[in-house]
Image (cartoon, rainbow, N blue to C red; front, side):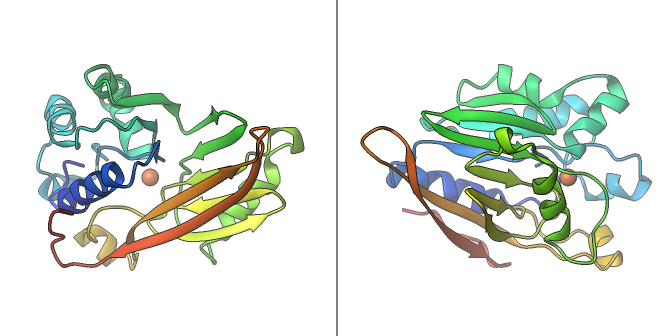
Length: 223
Ligand SMILES: [Fe+2]
């Protein structure tokens, strides 16, 4: 958020729809803010260029909800640590009761017996978009494997299942920036709606994903 290319219209639509569909939890896998990269041209792509500007923008404009949102910081958020030594996601979450900051880069969350890992990722693209996620999944010790692995960073959505782990690569809610276009990057705008079913003992027995995608057209309010 705080980029001129952010899509608050989609974000507002998603939270309204989540409320109407009695969603229990919303998970955000990082890059809540666009941050400050140090690349001079990025300044022209930002609505807010300062730490306080981006912090206040998110606190004010991120949809307020009765549904708790659990989030981690991504590399864009962590640029603020380099720029001014401040953890912007922690700062934002301290001002919003509905936003719960778990930490940076990689954090685990347990909902009943459902084990979830949020992982952001770093660096450029790979020869296949699933490559990094597959390598990361293979690096997780067996006793740490979650039911759900949700990853961020690459701005493209896909789903895969390996063993008992359902992997959700998330995209972004931002249009392609001039920088991304010049680099030949692509992005998707989408959200995963996920139904998790438990048996009578609270054990996970089914996880059903559905991807909702968006284009360039402004999304009207859900209602
Ligand atoms: Fe990122």
